[in-house]
Image 1 (cartoon, rainbow, N blue to C red):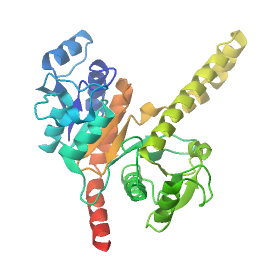
Image 2 (image 1 turned 90 degrees about the vertical axis):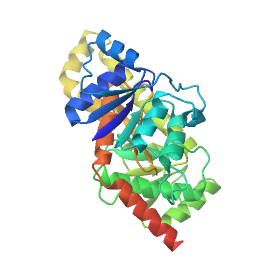
Image 3 (image 1 turned 180 degrees about the horizontal axis):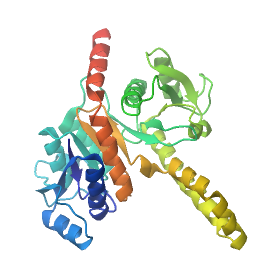
Image 4 (image 1 turned 60 degrees about the horizontal axis):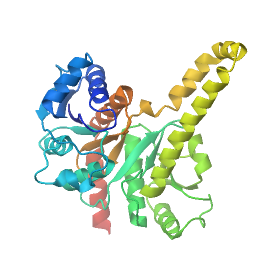
Length: 332
C-alpha cells in the first residue's frame, strides 16, 4: 500500500510528520512517499535521528501555508508539497495524508482527485471518542453553507464509513440540532430532518449537543460551520477537563498519594478521550482516500492518521459509495 505524505503540512512539520510516518511504516508496513524539499527533509531527519530509509522522497520546494488561499493547490505553476501529493495520488498511490491547510486539501481533493459521480459536496468526517464508543462527525468544516440535500449525502457517506472502516453494524445516524423534537431547528435542519427520515439509513432523529459525548449516535450530521464548532469545542473541553483533573491531584502530598490509587483509571480515561488515537479526518465523497490530520499533530497523532488511511484503503468503501450514488441518480 502506497501512502503519499505531505511532509510540510501542519504546525509541527516536517519533524513530527517524519517521526509519525516512521512509526506508521513500522507498525502498518506501508510504503511512504514524502513530498517536499528533499534537502530539508534529509536534514531534519538527520538532526532528529529519524530513520527515513523506508521512504521515497519526491522533491518539490513550495509549501502551502495555513494563510494561503485554498485555490493555491490547483495553480498550474505550483510545485508545493501538497499539490505534488495530489498528482501522485492520481497517478496510482492508494492514499494521501496531510496536516496542512484544510481548505486547500478540500479544493485539491475536489478538483484534482475529483468527486465521486453523484456526490454534490465532499465532507470532512472525523472519528471522535465518546463515553460509549467512537462516533463520526460530518461535516467538520469543508462546507460552511449547506443545503439539506448535502446533509443527506453526508449522512449516507458517514453511515457507510462507520460500517466499513469502524465495523459498526447499522450505524445510528442523528442530526445535530438545538432540540430533540422534529420541529426544532432552523429551516435547513427541518428540511434535512425530512430527507433523512425518508432515506434508507438508520436515522434516529435530532441530537442535542449535550448528548453527543455520551455516544447516543454513531454518526452525527451537521453543516460544516456547526460541525467545526462542535469539533473544536469537543477537543477544548476534553483538554480542559484532563488538565483540571491533573491539577486536582497535584495540589498536595495527600492528593498525589490519592492519584497513585486511581492512576490506572485516569490513564484509561485519558486514552479514551484522546483524539490522537484516531489522528485524522477522512474527506468523504472523492475518488481516492484523503485523510486530513490535525494541524497540530504530533508524531503519535500523525501515525494514527496514516492508520486511518490504512483502514480506509483496506475496505471497499469507495466502490460502495460509487454504487450508492449511481443508484440514487437512477432513482431520481
